[in-house]
Image 1 (cartoon, rainbow over the protein chains, first blue to last red):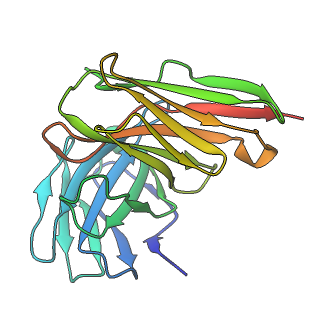
Image 2: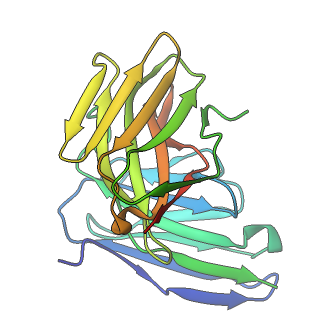
Length: 115
Length: 112
């Protein structure tokens, strides 16, 4: 049972480089999310996709773009990486966005360092 | 402006005793609360949730209590076991946001 799979697990980038973080879920969920977690902080929502074909900004979208490639896959792109984007990135999915209290299922994260 | 606050960064409890993790919130529009557990190098895993129309929800060793008037919730783990050592995140749903709003987490350490 893979659940939510994120690749890569670790990455080091230089300032200004671009990078795409991949996420795939095998639970047939409609909604997918990208969060970032900084040291000593909770997770903060970057972007989400309520359903295939739609994407919306979350709390901290600046410097990122997303693509909902199909129902299974949701990618996060950094066009020009900055040191402030050093973080652990988590992808999550849930069955339906608006169902109250629907738990989200998380991947194991991508640890991204930008020098 | 943190809307979900976990004021204890860490908590140490003896094995077999009760662990109580606390969470406060400021946004009265939150209508669902969830607790997640996170081990190092893994993603958060869902533990238990509670609707704002209830004051208690129980699942095995885990019970969540909600005091809506005080905007406070707590997670009780009884009895505490070594495998419970992890970071626990309180999260809230609603309040105008479409994702979850997380607290900073509490690191629970179960002492043998």
